Image (cartoon, rainbow, N blue to C red; front, side, top):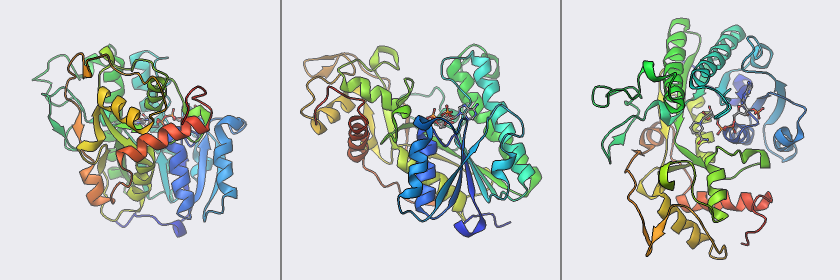
Length: 361
Ligand SMILES: NC(=O)c1ccc[n+]([C@@H]2O[C@H](COP(=O)([O-])OP(=O)(O)OC[C@H]3O[C@@H](n4cnc5c(N)ncnc54)[C@H](OP(=O)(O)O)[C@@H]3O)[C@@H](O)[C@H]2O)c1
């Protein structure tokens, strides 16, 4: 079955089109000449849609049309997917910290199931590309272990009892999120296999940063917001002790990988691609990220992050997760942004959007 798509095959629908990753998926598709059905929850909110509509006046080959739809309502995407050659599901009905772990899990399942039902209803969709997460791969392993697409969260439970198991879904949000993404992947591959009219595949991003298109992309739980906090001299807040191994990928490379997946003649039902650093230069401990920010933005006086002592981190960081987007590069094409370009573009966009009022360039 040949299911790879091209602009002449019809429109591509993108769920979560107003979101950080979704917006860049729309931008990339429009640049490549696609007619894009940008699905948003509320088409009446200028702060969420103006940057999408602006793409129509930018002299690009393709164009954007807005469709209002809600992931939690069955049939909500039927209209938007009608006649589409592919669907990219980049929306997620998770409110990040607003729900219980069980609600996070159930929400992901419900939203993916509704999207698949509308894909089947359309009868024209040949590819469904799901924005899963590296969370669907990662699980406790010794320091330095290099994860690949063959890994699934929930592997190696014997080595780490009580961690990534079905029993713990209701007890821990991170486990709920990871298991939801992994099980949603298995569900769509299974449905597509049985259906045979379309193939399903997934993009598994790690720590995504890169330019924000609008102020609404500065959500408090996001990695880009962590960078903003650090540039304001604050500690890195999303992990214990302010320490983390950042495994960074550019949002524009993540977006492009979604399209390349829909267009690929190599990708098959069940193909999954980690989108992470392409080599060790994109893997930075928080203190190394601080140092890069200081070097790239020497006029910003006080850059925060993890506690330092005599120029050295006060405590060692657990060396994980190591992973490289090698398979995506081999099968979809190379990533295009260096770590410094990505960091610089993130900060430049924060400044241009007025989100760093006290920082000077
Ligand atoms: N950012 C990362 O580092 C990262 C890493 C791994 C995986 N991911 C995955 O990538 C996907 C996109 O993440 P993101 O970072 O782009 O987040 P985001 O900016 O918060 O985008 C999420 C999108 O989902 C939409 N949405 C939420 N609830 C909805 C509902 N009930 N019906 C319809 N749409 C709804 C939001 O619309 P509104 O604008 O209306 O709220 C928004 O457009 C998610 O699946 C996430 O799990 C992200």
